[in-house]
Image (cartoon, rainbow, N blue to C red; front, side):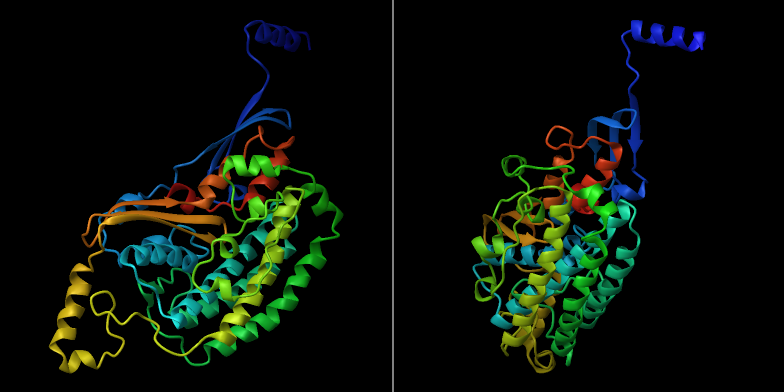
Length: 405
């Protein structure tokens, strides 16, 4: 005992402290991907949190500058890989703004319907994963059951479950298959009742509430100063949603409520997403019922492949356009544009500079997960214990592929 006391006195005399530096991740399941958190702890008390990113960096923005505009779509799939249709949509709108074109109404309805389905898919994961992070396993099993239904719809529409690449500049790749809208409405009917199951499991669960209520609180002013967006911003009392306040596609023709909560804690960020899924169901139903007939791709052979493949059999011009599009892509007028959408994680923006060629001169992604992650700091929240860091990270819902790009 005396020896320990002497060592302690010598340590303190040398100017060092008894704080512990702990690496959380990048392989830890609670970091939601390859994120490394350097924690400075005094026992269980958190004194400093320092996120280390870049472990999943793939150079998406530089790669895009060497791809044609159509070839970039699969790159956007892999940003927030839980919600590829939203990533596709934002990029397509940016290129269409440079071209000065607009997708046909049917294509806009299809895009918005798929974007809201992907919002449900992304929110379902964190709706179940945050409770699992703090010790409640059951909810994740429930949410994955419904997420499988969304994946089945994505497969029915696009042929694949995750990386859909379904958008095209000027519309979508192909029309909806027969029976698709009926299946979508059937899912909405089932899912509306399933959301209540998640709330019944957790809303009055004392252990869950103790881990998330009044934990990692972010004020509205801090949220704005940090550049937060999406549910993380609205949970802090800031009433802002791009779908309503700067509408794109056909969102101004849909009825929905913007979910805003006031406390800005882990619980409010979780509850915001649960309530937003209800609004997504409302919008999906409206899209399915209001969707007009007509073209799903612009009628411009220099931008889009011909919808009628029979033209290739007897039209030399169609053959030429088809070959040039497939081999070289299409040229985009010189200029620059920034277009942002309300992605599931927040404001997803694309900044593109065109030099008039078939490939972008500069390509920049404003990824919401990257911006939201900077809220993970002891300076802007009331995180006190190591367990609070886990709850805070889960409530921010970052996707590391979008953070690192």
